[in-house]
Length: 237
Image (cartoon, rainbow, N blue to C red):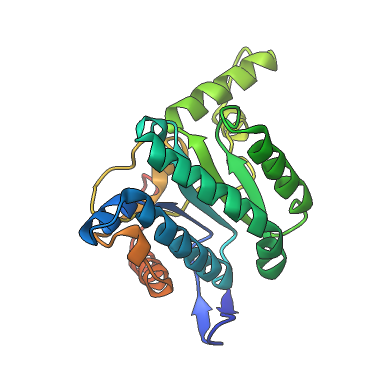
């Protein structure tokens, strides 16, 4: 369906229902400028805001961002603290963001390592945004393998003796979103790094050398145009 964007009024035919982002390159972006890695995360947060805004303008049903992985705790403590501080600040902004852009926030991953303050904010944001339309999945302390283990354990708790693919899909963190049409990774690496392993089965992969803090709204449009030119056969001819 043809949609009009909020920023230009230009008609956009967006075939992507769900786009997911591996936001890579913050540290290298800062290093190129002679700054500490945490400086890059600050500008990466600005890129996140503009990309989210553009995806909302295009009318996508869901957007997923790989914010903090289960492996990211291994980074230097100063960098981890910087990321958590930015997260805490963004959580304070979320209430205004969800109203302006009709956003429903869902936080995927294991929340238990986060402070009670952050967990309380997450719970509140999910509760007050539940009636909004565009789903934004924020992957925090997330890993694809741990998600699969979590889903299997949930099904065991339900007493399942035989499990269908649909049962498994329903037990995933992203069960309320359509499967991703395209996974975008910035920063030049050609891998998905333990991200949405089940959901990525038929996703189109899009890699760019551009570092995440440099990623613009126009880059989202370019990825959508690239998607339009791909042939999705889902195992058929």
